[in-house]
Length: 307
Image (cartoon, rainbow, N blue to C red):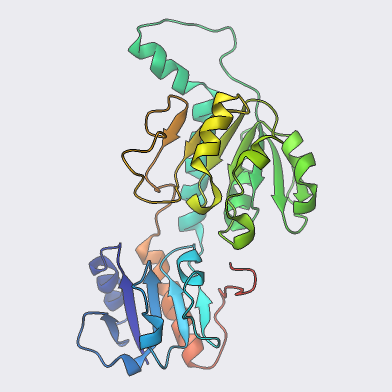
């Protein structure tokens, strides 16, 4: 009943140290360690190597190192009876909300304009530099809900879109089937959707044409959602006033991408929220122990929904 950690993109040394510091009784291995793979019952992964799950005949649990599970769900080799978990908690929702609030205020207070003014030595004291903002959040899970509640405290009008109606004080909740009504209410769109087949490429011309003119786009979910070329076109056509993008279909973003040089697009390198190791490790160990005891983990991914 051992645990295997695998990633082709993360430095796993801090994770190994954290696991062993938290519980030195559990057997924790990396793929390159000399270990009998038949012992592995839990795989802890982030962008794991191709074919990994086929090498683990006694796999009972797959645990994501982060909140996202698309890197797992996209693997065709997941055994039918294997459970999947992900990381949740204040260590994710707090930083994510802070990032989104920063992006919203960056746009509301026109800091992008003032940066350009600074480079041109322009002193432009507008009568009212603060724009009125109606914020729409696509995806009202734990992260979206936390952001909505904090935006209400800051005085924003907030609208949420989700599969089920949410009861959040002062937040207007719309169902996915009410998308057009939702889009008609907002001038900032924050995307916090899970990466599923139904959300692939949703940030495209088809959706942008239904927005109010000059809506501002913030995507902190997955690059899977966005069509880069359509974002640029929508900005040029003034359907979008600009975009704040933390995620991209291919990462790292190619140096040849026209997104880099666009004056109305802000780019950050997928850092809106970074998993806190010391918060994640106890969750993963707890899930491992429950599954080994024949119980269901508290944080269980719905394999039909994909999140």
